[in-house]
Image (cartoon, rainbow, N blue to C red; front, side, top):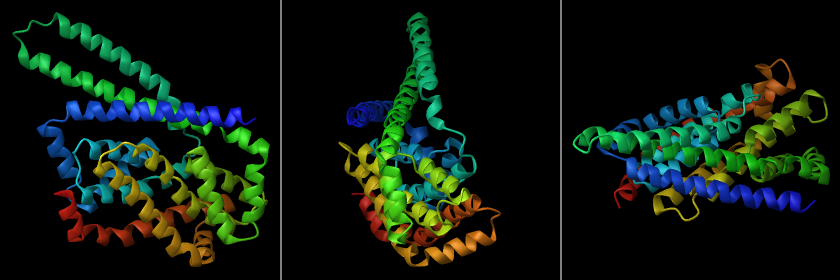
Length: 323
């Protein structure tokens, strides 16, 4: 039983870090004046960064994927500190769409995306070799496009690594880990927060943990208030993947990961005394306990991000980003 836990975690971590490094190296080689200019415009202020990442997270259905991308861009020197803070806040808002579209699993495209990236890269290499050396501009464009393929391949490996690590869910359930947490969470709101954080850190998917809480609430096994506490805890637990991605990163990459953790822990501490109120407000907008939990996540993340946004404009971040 233990091998069914440790092997997926270790193997998934290796694949994850390999993808992280491949994507980072590809971005560094591809990065040119136009990309740098676009990124600076998209994240020139924390507000723009928040709006950009909200849309991107909603599109990809994964706040983890966007956070990891942000760490990659930061490592490549393409983002300043203030911009990354805005991106982090945006991922927390964009991820709320995941609970509404819980059936969509972005990890399912990992292997097809990897295969497609390699096939396109191979075709580009063949084409590159057949173009006369006199056509320098065309050859340069093809070379840059090859780096894009490598970046997508690295990103697909990241998704694949996360999916492999998520496979420890059933063995954990057999060991009674889920049931143990749920029983304690039903007795204390604090246990609910800890359960959400711990389970999300273990299976690397806040969406999966929130979906479990929603289904238990609908079946009447779990009070909606405890489900809301699990939602808040999952917001903290999802930072673990970003911390993993920051292993061996530059100072900027580590800043993204630790800022993500700090902002999400602050939000959890802020809302912890008001979980019952949050559950009551979200209940007014819901027709069942499951949607009540989903609405509570949306309210929680939007309010926390808007409250933290002004802090992203402090002069200290501009000083740090230019250091």
